[in-house]
Amino acid sequence: MSTPRGTETPAPSITSQARRKKERGQLGQPVRGASILGTGSYVPEKVLTNADLERLVETSDEWIVTRTGIRERRIAGEDEHTSQMAAAAGRRAIEMAGLDPLEIDMILVATVSPDMMFPCTACFVQKKLGAFNAACMDISAACSGFLYALEVARNFIAAGTHDYILVIGADKLSSLVDWTDRNTCVLFGDGAGAAVVGHREGKNGILQTVMGSDGRFSDILLMPGGGCRIPITKENIDQKLNTIKMSGKEVFKQAVIAMQAAALEVVERSGLRPEQISLLIPHQANSRIIDAIATRLKVPSERVFMNLERYGNTSAAAVAIALDEANRTGALKPDDYALLVVFGGGLTWAGTVLQW
Ligand code: UT7
Image 1 (cartoon, rainbow, N blue to C red):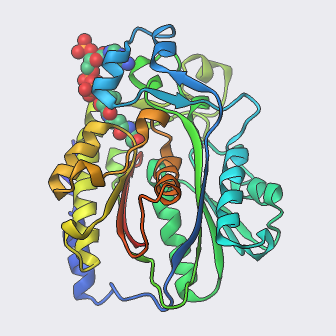
Image 2: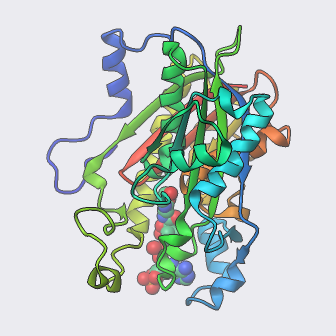
């Protein structure tokens, strides 16, 4: 990462952090391998096109497509909450894994648009799925949340304390967006993606993950209101403090730097070369960010999975929905190496290499 504004010490690069850990022998292999046993996703029925947005704010289909690659996004109904989308995606993943919901022993929901401040959205999902043997918690790492949750799950599987973990990325950002702010409202959509993680004999499907964060950039992508610092009051709502604020250009720049570094680092730590990656599944935020990463990794466009033209940026759900679509459409074949790389508010970022 480059040096953040107003700080004297440069942020340590992901590479140097990993190298130091390697020297200390902290990059060991997991005791028990973890694989993805099933995937699922869900997007709401309602489609909001760029033409629809032209009627809401001063924008154009041409601007949105050329600057972001997005053509339409899905918007959840007023009564359709994050937990409902999460449960729908989770149910599909459990079905594909061939499990009964009662066999799931942990549910992790990555989200920044939970149904409520508490209880956690994972508990609502548990109730909907009847997965009553699961321990439930949410993970908050914005758009990076799904890979963070996947890595938490991998560690529980590796430790041998849990057998089947349902990992979900779900967000209803339409409920956090200022629909009069053209800088943000054209970007986001709603949805959920899920994966069941467990041990598969003779397979070590989740090969490596790198994760990083830099809180010095916490002010470039955030929703300031709604927590204890800026509670929900009429005054704060009138000032729209309970909506997403973003410095788009700065986020763009940091996204490219962090995702490129994370991608290169995790590929190296997996003992692979970029040309061995069969499918790059990046966070679906902006086609120009994705192009920059693919170019740096020298991954040709036909090996890059993209669905942002249909769904926009669905935050924690984006890479999870893409993984499920890649799985169900046959874009991922057995033993293929897939590279997932994400970036989000915090700032947070992560890269994961899977062997399918
Ligand atoms: O999940 C991770 C979170 N988010 C991201 O990854 C987003 C990262 N950032 C981006 O994707 C891009 O920065 C944006 C798509 C948000 C913006 O693209 P940009 O090329 O960085 O545009 P800009 O912000 O520099 O704006 C250029 C112009 C401005 O007009 P002026 O000041 O040059 O007259 C904006 O006001 O475009 C204007 N603009 C728009 N025009 C039409 C901003 N939004 C719109 C819009 N329609 N929706």
